Image (cartoon, rainbow, N blue to C red):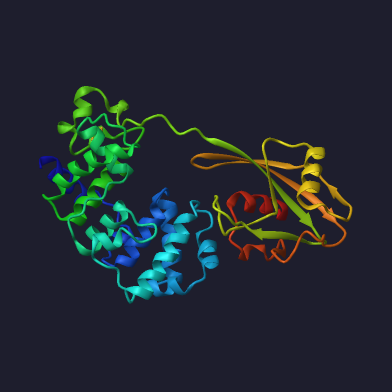
Length: 348
Ligand code: SF4
C-alpha cells in the first residue's frame, strides 16, 4: 500500500506527457500499445503520429489494404503485429460498429490482443481495475519484492499478476498502470537502476538484500537459429524483381528480392547450382560477387548474401508473381529493412 502511494506521487510529478496518456480513446490507446510492444517510446512515437494522421478512426484503418498497413509499419519489425492490427481494426469496424468493447473476455480474444493489451485498454480507456503486466513492471516487482521466479517462464506469470492485482485496488487503475510502467522504464531500469532517486528505495527488498543485479531472474535464453538467405538482385535493364513472401515464416506478405535459402554460405559455383535446381534458367546470365549482410531477430540471425544477376531479357521463371520495379518506384512496397538497406546502398 505504501509502495503504491509513493509510486503514484512520484508519477504525478515526473510522468512524460505522451499522446496516448492524455486520451481516453480506446482506438488510440490500443494503437499505441501494439506499436510499443518491442519498440522504444521514441521510435514508437513517430509511428504512432504517422498512423493517427493517416487513420484517425479505427474505420480508416479497417478500410486500408493489408499491403498499405505493412508499408506504414515498415521498419518496426515483428510484422505479425501489423497484420493483427489490421485484422482487429476490421473486426471492430464490422462487428462492433467501430466501438471497442469494454469487456475483457471479448477484447482478449481479438487478434494480437492478449492479457496485457486488454488490461491496458480497459484500465486506460474505461478505468476498469485490470492490472497491466509488461516487461518494465515484471522487473520493478522482481526487485521491489526480491522475487526469484524467472520472468520469461509462463508459469511465473500468475504469481506476478496476483501481486499486481492486489496492489491496483489502492489506486485509480489508469494512474496505477501508467505509474508502474513509467517507474520501470525511467527509474528501475534494466542495467543501471536509479536507486538514489527511487521513491520506494526504502521498501525495496532487492536493495536491502543486495540482489538488485540478480533481479529479475531469466531462465536461459532460447538458442538463436542461424539462417542463410541468398537474395537475387536480378537486373533487367534498369529494373529488377520483387516477389511477395508467403507461407508461415517471418516477414509474411512483405515483398523481397527472389530468395534461395541455403544451409550455409555459398560460393559462386554452389549458387549457380542452386539457381539451376530452383529455376533452370534457359538463357545465359552473369553473376557478380555477393554483398554480405547480417540481420538479428529475437530468435534468428539472418546471414544474407545479395547476388547480382544480369539477364538480357526477362527469364521465363520470373512469372506473374514477380513484380518488375526499379530503384525509383520499389518504395511503394512493404519490404524487410534488411532488403531495403541493400537497395538503398545501390541508390547512393
Ligand atoms: Fe528498483 Fe532501485 Fe527502486 Fe529497488 S531501489 S525498486 S532496484 S530503482
